[in-house]
Length: 517
Ligand code: XMP
Image 1 (cartoon, rainbow, N blue to C red):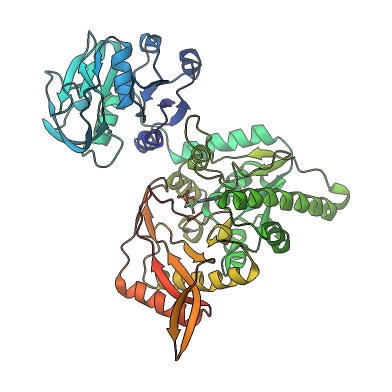
Image 2 (cartoon, helix red, strand yellow):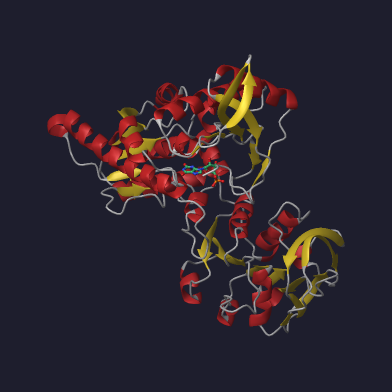
């Protein structure tokens, strides 16, 4: 693999994605890994990511100079570029000048190296305080900017390269080309990582992990669990039973859809567990988001344990303990739950940070290294219908984290109605594939005064949160047509008794997350 060493920036994920977009497999590793451990993973190339800190900050991670002697091609980006310069004897100065956002970089070197086939002047995206003043011995300076005399360098003899800017963000006009120059021209890699390979590899891995054991898979109705289940089914066929936990936090029509679309497409064995009471009881009186997430994560597992018992009973004398639980955990879930060392815990995704400690199942997580768009591609290749692979994401904790405040049956009913209207209108407007997802949120503890008919109302607001995104790591609010917003607002306030206001969330991510909790 190409290893992306994570210096604590969310950019590491983006870098890994861009490398994969070039059809080269890439993984993120924490910067705390020793050079020896890093090399033990047999990297074809190494990319050092950006990071939030200055190389001079107290406790700032450094890179051992031995990494650059191993003969593996290395590409340093931003912080990684500076750390490389410093480790090899270049000068990095705290100039106090910050360069942030779009910047012009000018090619300076005689050779182009990683800047091959690019214009002399290119627009790049910068975010740095310190800057490299002098490249280490043996390096040629390839580009400079107003604030960074050494903005890119190369030492082809040792296969070491670096840029001060962020080639992984779309704002860097030729960013992908720079990465590909490094991967293909300099590191001499082949673009041979494809969806087909992912399936083959995961199927082999699942067979090895599971052997002849029995497996259950929680289906949520979303893309991830559906694709995970389809992969496991491809690997071990009948050993798999899917369990759909109806936790009472579902949207309208959700349970029916799973039964219809997924079972029809795969023919998988399905067990529906009706567990709304268990979840609602456990959630009673709770309004703190992290507590809710943890409770839902725990009750999911308890529901699976109950389902397992039922399945064993149903199997009669054939019944045997089910040892494995499949989860559609994705790479961003792992990293955002603090799984990537050095990254902050933003939210406990129900299927990662929310797992109880006394878990009796061994987890099978075939999508743990994949991004959402890669999961969709895998699903399509496995033959899942467009209704499933094209579905907008819906979080496992469901409407439980879209009611701001305590969750109860009455509030769920309100939100379910409002959500159904918003979704139907979005679909009718033909915008399903343009909008990444549109959470509909009930501000259950907020009330405002309104007037309807001749009377005063004192109802709750509903928030519409339509976003566009590539991978849910970052997002922008969607500019939905006013007519559509007006229709949704009219219908919700007219048709859902108890809602008298509809508001639009116009926050990007960051600073907001997509879900409100
Ligand atoms: P946030 O709110 O973190 O959401 O910006 C990013 C994406 O993840 C979804 N999400 C979840 N999905 N379990 C899931 O399966 C969870 O606990 C969870 N929390 C958020 C969210 O809908 C968005 O697509």
